Picture 1: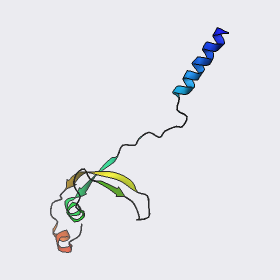
Picture 2 (picture 1 turned 120 degrees about the vertical axis):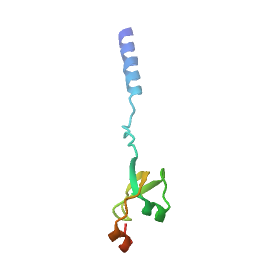
Picture 3 (picture 1 turned 60 degrees about the vertical axis):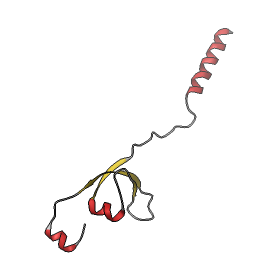
Picture 4 (picture 1 turned 180 degrees about the vertical axis):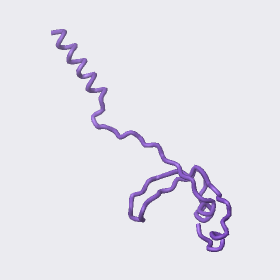
Length: 83
């Protein structure tokens, strides 16, 4: 009798320790580097969180601005005023 009671208590303790619903592990937030002109135009700074999506209706993915880069000047791009 005592053996069965101890087995039952052990079984209950094991089931209580296991969560009933499996939780998805937290994904680390990814970082991105953006061009200095985009940072100025969009008023973004290092540490800001932004959502990247393929289209406005898409869910997207949250990322953190970790760097602002500045490329050397290219005369062709300066004349067009493009990113």
